[in-house]
Length: 196
Image 1 (tube, one colour):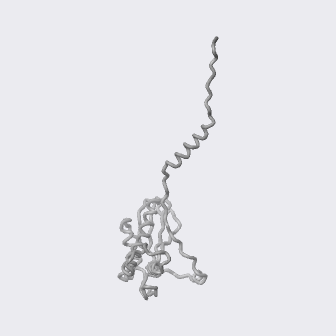
Image 2 (cartoon, helix red, strand yellow; image 1 turned 180 degrees about the horizontal axis):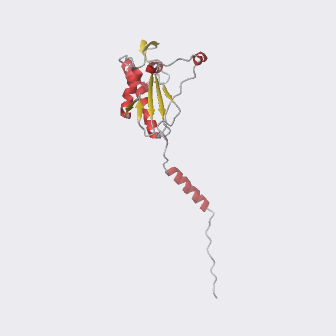
Image 3 (tube, helix red, strand yellow; image 1 turned 90 degrees about the horizontal axis):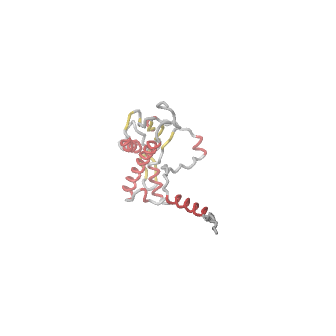
């Protein structure tokens, strides 16, 4: 008597569970590239009276930074290496020698500092070409922000003996330092400056 062999059946009921667990494992174990970004605190909305006032900005108060499609910097109409940008921006923001071609120093009453001259109306104008790489754009932003941070640190250490970043948000000394060196970076809409 020949015995008929039955085919063994595989229990596929738990296959969906196994596939789901593998999917979860790979999602958890895989590293994802994270996009770098820019942490920027937006200024508060100006009062209505301030919005109505339109002030004409003098050329000496504007620091123009252009980045072309080849990722080259043109700062104040001169080619500049990105490694020189921070120091150049610091000199512009502070104008320590009170040069005529840098922002005008205006005496201002600031808590903890008394009446001191600051470059109240300075603006850094950043414009990039549509073909500018994201890495270069971020690097330029980082250098400009670092210029402000270094100036703020130097001032805070000289006056209070503590770095600017170590001051608490609620500390009025932090506000005072920000009034001396307010972050003023104006970004224009990208254009096709250097071609396609």
